[in-house]
Length: 300
Image (cartoon, rainbow, N blue to C red; front, side, top):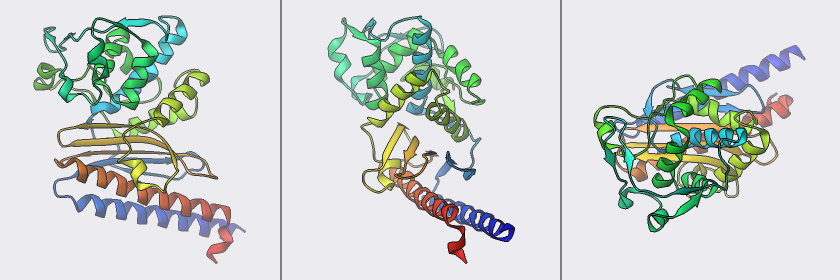
């Protein structure tokens, strides 16, 4: 029996090495591309990392930490989820405090721009921030909880490098290099904390998962999976930067976390295809690893 177990462990290690080689080969096919990948199977010890601690512009993936902070603060009674916030399209730059406004043409959701001067519920803004990646909702909510508080909470959860410094479209801060940044490892830690019910009280993390399962932009990690696979995730995009951070729920087995961060690809369709291809490779590896674990004798 010990020989069978040792043989199964060897095959699992060989499978991970093969996956790593496939992922690195695929990344190299896109000239100038650089990627960070973190894969954690929540039902076993199976993991894989590629450049996991390299820092990337976080783009809209930073909206997941903001969501966590919102639920945690609401749980303490700091505000209510049904509380209305006034929609004002003016925010203070992190660089010098000067005011700036968001451009509706650069926002993936335009609905809130028709509600300037009205109050919109926190929970409605939160959902738009994740499912539609609304920049207007994001900046309004960061004003409510504070970017520094978001980063401090991420440290509590074990994410050591992610930095949430400001809202989005802050041009002066961008020019000064004052950006939101993250690593694949940190986003994987954060996504796992949500799935494990540790990011906030369990009922709150269940609400977070329901929101991320309703994500409307599914051309990256979900696109590399068989039809019908449930994925709770958040994408992020700016010029030559494209990300996706996900919890994938394969039927009949435990979920896994997959984070793919990319930079250096100016064509958004190409970067989405790269992420989808990596997702497909990881899914196939995960299925094979679980089949091996369930029946180690089948390899003999």
